[in-house]
Length: 161
Image 1 (tube, rainbow, N blue to C red):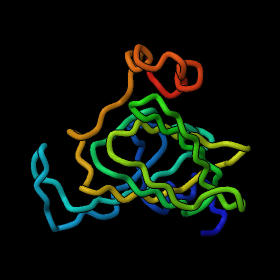
Image 2: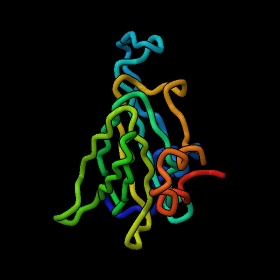
Image 3: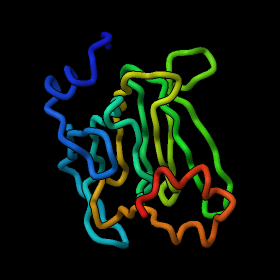
Image 4: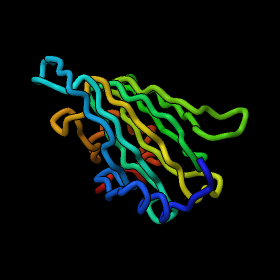
């Protein structure tokens, strides 16, 4: 992808503000449906997700479904992944040799994202399997730190009070 600005990408891709922070647009919903414990879901859904200097963070949240992330342009963007066990991983998507272009986040893992190293934007495409449904999504709140106080300083900027 060319070095389009975040503003140009928002306009060209028809992105809207995302409740997590940043911008998004659903680009695919499978016609195939699967049954889950929570009800029927599309087999797969996909979005474009954009962070910009004006919207540089994605709030800490988790989904029941697995999510595959593919860096399309810009970056680097750092993902903070918190397991229920308390293990915290950092993964950076970017174009440098030590950075990834792809990230798999299993269902149930807490996830936050942010632009790093002076990045002006990061465009990531996500595929959600089974497909995304708001009923399967939850934002973290301050209660998360009752179970994981060791991560309060790092993760507080990604959690609304």
